[in-house]
Amino acid sequence: MKSEFPIPTLRRGPRGLALENVDLADIAAAHGTPTYVYSLAALTAAYQSWRDALGERRALVCYAVKANANLGVLSAFARLGAGFDIVSGGELTRVLAAGGSADKVVFSGVGKNAAEMRQALEAGIRCFNVESAAELERLAEVAAAMGKVAPISLRVNPDVDPKTHPYISTGLRNNKFGVAFDEALILYRRAAALPSLRVAGIDCHIGSQLLDGAPALEAAEKILGLVDRLAAEGIELEHIDLGGGLGIRYRDEEPPAVADYLAPLLAPFDGRREELMFEPGRSLVGNAGLLLTRIEYLKPGVEKNFAVIDAAMNDLARPALYDAWHDIVEVAPRASVRRYEVVGPVCESGDFLGRDRSLGVEAGDLLAVLSAGAYGMTMSSNYNSRPRAAEVIVDGAHAHLVRARETVEQLYAGEQPLA
Ligand SMILES: Cc1ncc(COP(=O)(O)O)c(C=O)c1O
Ligand SMILES: N[C@@H](CCCC[NH3+])C(=O)O
Image 1 (cartoon, rainbow, N blue to C red):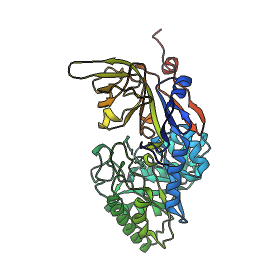
Image 2 (image 1 turned 90 degrees about the horizontal axis):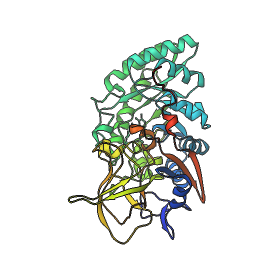
Image 3 (image 1 turned 120 degrees about the horizontal axis):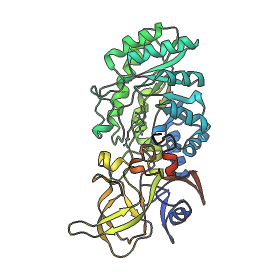
Image 4 (image 1 turned 45 degrees about the horizontal axis):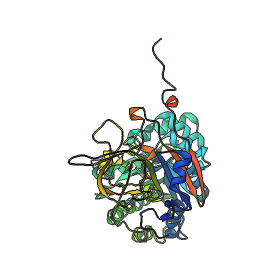
C-alpha cells in the first residue's frame, strides 16, 4: 500500500478522496459530519507488520485500547488474534463485549480501584501490570478475599528519556508511572511471598510517539538485567512486556518501520524462554483513521482567514492539548488556494485543528483531518454540549457505521432539573 498520505489506504479518486474503495463524500452524505472514518485494511496491515516482525517468536501483541476503544475496532483486533492492554474496568467491559478474550488482557494504570480488580479477577485476565507498592498490597487483599490468585507483573520505571513530548513521556524518574528501578527487587520479593499473588512478568513503557528506537532498547536492556537478577533469586518470570510507544508520521516525521524498530529490541531476547509482549496503540490505529468534517463558514479577515468547520477540539483534542499537527486535506480541492486557520465552533481560542493551512475550498466543502485514528475519539468530550461524532469502519467497498452520532438527549439522560 503506497499513498501520498500518511494513511496508506487513502487516495484520490475521480470523486475526490476515497478510503479503500469508499468515497468520503458518500460517507458524509450517509452519516453526516463530523465523522471518524477508519480503514480496516490499514489497521490490519499495521497489526500484520507487528506479527511479521515478531516472526516465530512467542509474543503477544496487546493492542492499547485507550488509543481507540470503538467496539468495531476492538472486534477487528480480537479476530486478528491480538491481546489487549487496558487501563480501566470500562475498557475491560468493552474488550469482552467486542469478543476479546480475557486471558489475553493485561491491565495497566496507576489507579486501579478494588471494583476494577475484582472485575478483572472474575474475568480471568492474563496479568495485572502493578504500578506501586500500595497497589500490590491492595490487589493481594482483593484476590485473597475472593479466594483467587492474581497474576502480576511490576511496571518498572527505567528512568530513560524517550525524547518525546513531555506530556506523553512516562518512563522518567519524575513521572507518576511504574515503580522505581531500585524498588522493584524488594517489591518482587514481597509479591513472591504473598500467597494470593503469582509473579508472572515484568513490564515497562517509556512514552508515546517515539521516533527513535534507542531509548526503548536502553529500557529493555535495563529490564533484562533485572529479570536475570530476579532469576538468580529464584523468581522466574513467564513474560517480559516492553510496552507500546512506537510513533507514526503525522507530518514529516520519519518513524522507524515496525521491523526496524523491533530488530535491535528483539536481539537481546534471542534464545530466551520468556514470552514477549508489546502494547502498541498509536502505531496500530493512528494512520488507519481520519476525521471527516464540513466547512460551515469561510471568514476572511485582515490578518487571517478562518475556515470554521463542524468538528472542534471536543472531537479531536490533540491540537489544543499538545499543539499537535494533523494534515488537513480537501476531499475535492478547488483551484483557488488561500491560507486558513482551521477552527471549530467551540468557544475557546484554543479550538483549532490546524493553523495556517493552504486550502482550496469553499463553504460547504468537506475536509479530512488525517492521522486521527489514535487518541481521537477516545479523548473526545461533550464540551459546549456537542454530541460526539459518528464512527464508520470502511472495509473494501463497504462502510459500516460502528457508532451512531450521539444525540443531545443522550448527553443529559442522567440529569434532571430541580423539582
Ligand atoms: C502502559 C501503556 N501501554 C501502552 C500505551 C500505548 O502507547 P502508544 O499508543 O504510544 O503505542 C500507553 C500509552 O502511552 C501506555 O501508557
Ligand atoms: N493521548 C496522547 C498519547 C498518550 C498516551 C497514553 N499513555 C496523544 O494523543 O498523543
